[in-house]
Image (cartoon, rainbow, N blue to C red; front, side):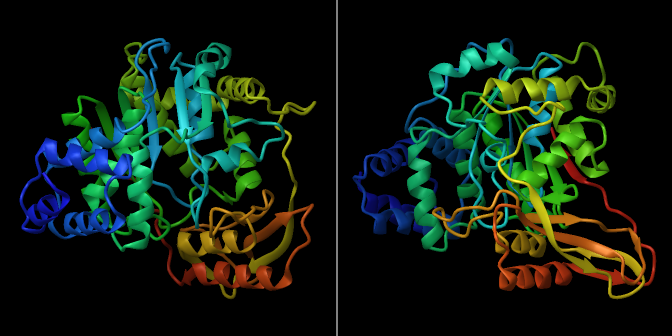
Length: 441
């Protein structure tokens, strides 16, 4: 068996065997295959695709290329969630404490943000003292503390995926459903969960721009999950406009606190409650409630303070600071430096999430390279969203930087230009679309 034979076989559109895929991943992990041959096979996969069996074999090989988490210490079924990422997506800090109120214990391994989509780890690190570097051996004690743990991904988790991902990024082989699906699912399976709820974002602020592509990715991951004997559900959700109103690290965590205190925006409350309900149901903790009843109960627990108390427990468990008033202490304070006004009367018909994301990154809330430092207080707050009526001069959104950071006028002007271009206003009323586009169970 040689890499040339494997590349040639896939180039002709033939299905690779489990032995051939295993040979490939072993060579990738141990750096026995040169980058040019790895890249050649990746391009052949982009052009010729993979069957469900091939995708699953590739996924499991990558998952087993390094350490895998043993979550047997969790009481019941270990359930994980994954989002494909989007602007203003802050569901994880809401969902984890929410499901904990039902007795669902969870270990969440997350990453940092790169580009226009923020990272869950960055958001938690905007809380003073909060540690996201939790050793695997400390997971059980954290679960005993509060029923949940959030940590950065260990370098030993699915190491083959890291090699492949780095090469895909520089060889125009990112946009392949089999490669995307196997990358995501390998990390979820290596993470140790037996049940997984996936949130595939769809729209201008997501990697999948169209419903058709989002559904293909969702179906591919569902197929992998089934063949890998995991309980997998998937929702496809809207990311044509940002989720919630606040975009940026401290700003988003402030909105998380608002939501857990019963005053969150409708779209964020809706999707967080639905994801949480799936997790509770998959963990076998529904206690006879129908799915609709579970969703309503999740909303109740956002309103009655139960989830908020669990959130505080999580913060304290991982070294975060709580103020005397009961809220998190943040590493910086967002300071409004510019507001964008409506140029005319009408109805908001579009808020382009990708442009709002670019505005956030421009003022420092995100990274363009992994080495970039972020301004935790920077971001954008939306005052108007799709369907809202506006009058000329009304504030559409506001630009923020951290109070400890001196605002760069040129960057603020550029961000303001992105934010203004994100909005479209029309003369006739506009209906808000559903936040959940499709559900696959």
